[in-house]
Image (cartoon, rainbow, N blue to C red; front, side, top):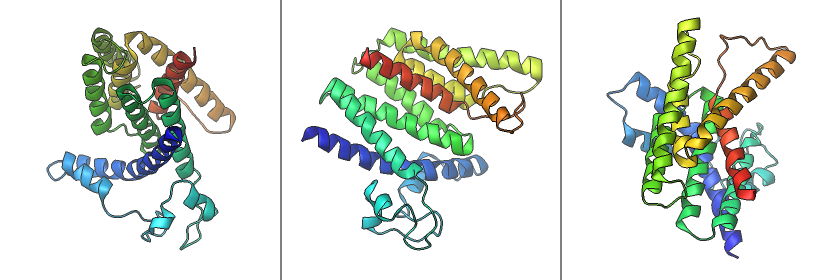
Length: 263
């Protein structure tokens, strides 16, 4: 019964993550344009208001159209009002979140560690899709994830020792920053975005310093393979082409975490 409740909670959180993924980048872009008018509380306000609406036609959604997964299935993946297709990504994110909630609960039980790890993965899901959509890794997410990780490590709420977390922070930020500086001297352009530094620093905090080099190296290999695949599919990809790198960092981190869980 408790496992079922955890899955339902995961579906609800996944539905909320869909809202954050859609709304937060718009608020962040406005913050960049009008820094004096937008701050952290504005970001919270943009996420929480207005009530949920259909992105395709802006019609406000009723409660029965907001039920995770079920509403999408009953509507057959189409908007109730304008009949345009609703992306499968919405129920996918809800199911993915619920799955991660269940796995963490199954591993750590009803404990603070479960609570913290599901927050960690909720952040990663949000950052993954925001970066794909907008090439942004918002500071409000990466920095707060780092602060939460350091706090959890300091109070031993997670198994990563504080020494490992601090070294992970240093390596996670310092290694890609150094690589980017070298690349900039060579190509006169950035190879990484600053958001990638902050994301890898957060991952180093949560997963420990030993994870940083495997994450950085393997994600680079995946990015190269992906670029080659796009070239084979007819897209012209070169050293000047911008690719969202956060999803590769996150994918490797998730695989690393779960490989340790199931070992």
